[in-house]
Amino acid sequence: MAGTFIHSTTPQKFMVRSFAIPQLMMLIVFAGGMEPSQAAQEAKPSASHLSGSGHQQTREAHWDYLGVEGPEHWSMLTPKYMTCETGRQQSPINITMAHHGHHAETLEFHYQTSELHELNNGHTIQVSHTSGCNVDLNNRTYALRQFHFHEPSEHHIEGHAFPMEMHLVHQDEHGHILVIAVMLKIGADKPVLGKLWKWLPAQLGQEVSVPLNLSIADILPKNTRHFSYSGSLTTPPCTEGVQWIVLEEPILIAQHDVEQFVGIIGHNARPVQPVGNRHIEEN
Image (tube, rainbow, N blue to C red):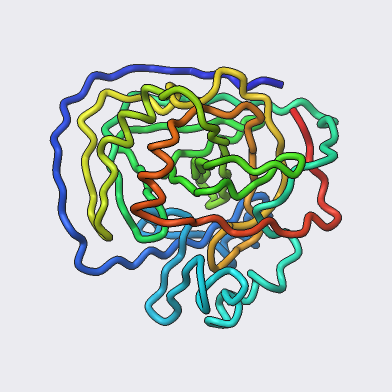
């Protein structure tokens, strides 16, 4: 079932600011699709933790995408990251042989025009906002916390990787996490993404307020048919129980925008993980 956009617009004034954060400590523990009691014990983040990007960076165990701190070695950096190796519902995955959902999912986007802030956290460009945006999935409301980008795409569809992937990270009142993934392919400039790219912060810890009247709904494809499955964070500590929605229709990005992102962040995609006995549904 295709999703529904409910799009409101609230004009705002914007100011540009850029500053370095002397010391970043990004700590998020995500849990979605779990029983509330399990989520509370294992992965319910506090408000201060939700400034992160789905990327958990701790003082005692720095991680990266290359070399001895890369994905093949995450579990060896600290016992806290052991799930990256021992977990059986890890993300991303290669989406193939999806089954039509037995129960039609209701997916509604309630995204407002909002002031946006772009942060270079060293692992990605993370975009947060100042006004309420949320998604309703099967009558459960998830608030949008932030969105960020990976190059190349982390998920594959029928063995095909895309040039980039965008993750929109949501959380409900119980701490459950819903991540909506959108694939990006090379094409003509997408006006909204082109405007965001104009303000990418190039320095680690730099944050920029984007002077745009922008609704995130304008970025998403009109067709919101999607795949869904239960997975994990794609970055340490690789916590499982995350509900994933992967939109089938990609959006467009210019080649030079991809190159600009890589020039700032580098390649930041975790390899696909075994699907195991999980079911992938298509709605």
